Image (cartoon, rainbow, N blue to C red; front, side, top):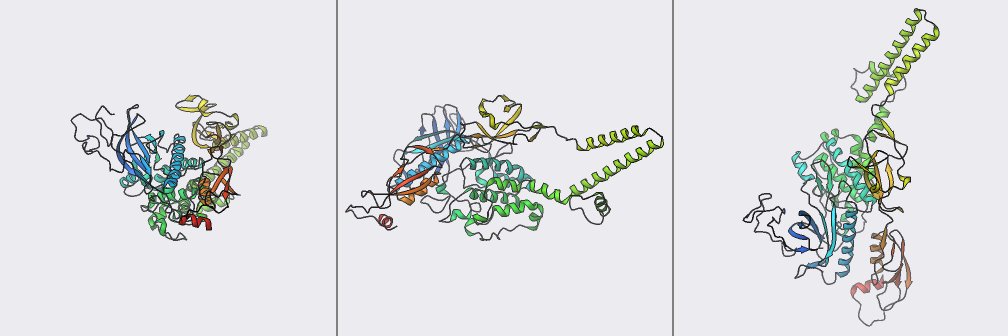
Length: 564
């Protein structure tokens, strides 16, 4: 129980006689949530106090809360799926009759998602999860309380859209973190401007992680799809979601930033992708490779779309531009360069870099001419031939050294991977872990045979060069991915297959006989329930192929199962 008086909308400390919060303007005496949500003042784990309900996403209620131990506001997320659960008299979450199995499946998925988000708290775009606990018939996760503006707010401040350069600076680091999320098996499926926060440091954070069941139209839960940002497959009843689904959503957000408008609703997209219209002004302002990346990332058909966040990031970066410039500025000989310089005033330059390269060549020609003149002049003074040769050689070497010397010192990257180094065992310098004086930066996490937090990948690779002061990006091991085999006894075989495959298992079937359960229902599994196994292992389901001997009439659903 809170002793001091606090605003239940922002958890700021108030005077005893305050009737309105001076920080958020909330009326102190009107602090009640709707009856379907937790009551204000409810306490959990003898630590957290529930405040106002902030938002609801179909399966998750988000409350502002207060941590009595740390004396700080927090966000508290409650698993409370609409359509399959209700609020009990004492505030507990109860599955609706007939929805018990569905409730349990989604509860496990919520737990799995919460744990995945908690593991990835070191990613720069994550809002850290501090605690996960089970109480009240549900699961709760507790995260840091942040007061950042959303991307929607930033767009309003900027007049509705951003330049490509502004967008690039925001989203290239964001895409790197999202790619690491996918590597760890965590997908969002709900990326939109209202789920992206913009920090004072100019970095983006991603919120709104939820269970996949609320990101599609084909489940019993209330769908939460962002108009214009949800991919076409999320409106379908027969398509599975994948990394390409997040590719579509984040590309749609970038499209919104640079054009001022979201793409058309995913449910009504032209299958050929010909309904993305750009004004002439916008089309001319975007580099060609960016326009091509946006088109490829927003393809309605998954098989034609960019498949991964990493590929999208590569297509949006300037690597494509550098390659194009290299082709455009390729010079065959000095005569070609002189000819291009002569025609400079007759037509506009296609590229400023080509002009710079041409000027550099002309300067080089002048230097060579100067050397030749010096050579002739020294020869006229009848100096010995060996001395003249020495003078010329020295002049040429000096010129070459001046034009090729790197402007930024580089170092050779050491091999961190083979050393089996635990990231957190390394020393800290200037708030960064260092390896052989090289600063390190966590770029992501990967499942591997190494122990947790051992460095298993790095960028740049060993032996490559790195500019002075730059960080080596490293990937830490999450350990070997293991999952406890769930109990699917009695489930219909197809239902059980979909669930296990969603957890990452490969599924095989074997016939069995058990007349006490419905036809095509799961009798058991191998490995059996409760065993810890690698998530990509094969689970063999034993399926009943004997018609039940019970005299009880089968339900319509069971009759369908028996006929399938």
